[in-house]
Image (cartoon, rainbow, N blue to C red; front, side):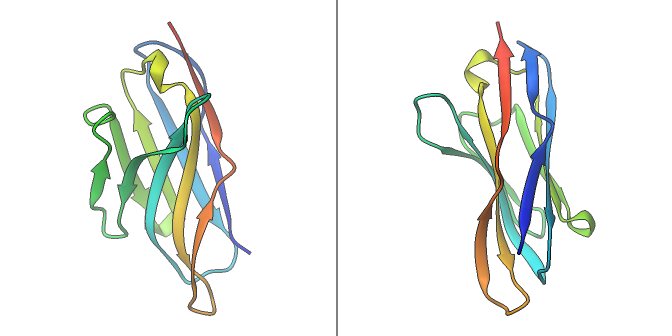
Length: 120
């Protein structure tokens, strides 16, 4: 079984930065695309950023210029650097990954989420 575990969330002030991490563990062959989603209170979960295994990144228009997604394939970890945090960035941030299991089946997996709260 594969697990994705996020870390790095917390309570910060407007303008500060955070770096979220998401590490995969368990038995699998490889990880293809990875992504960060976020869900603010009362809102639907939305895609923030994606990254391919080769490192090509894409961002939602709402986060371009302030969010940077990266990954370390050797550590099976994806990161999200968030700069110039705003109160509207307050949300639970979820890691998502397309994981190739040992049976060569592709499984889309989610982490449990990490809370980011930005005070004004």
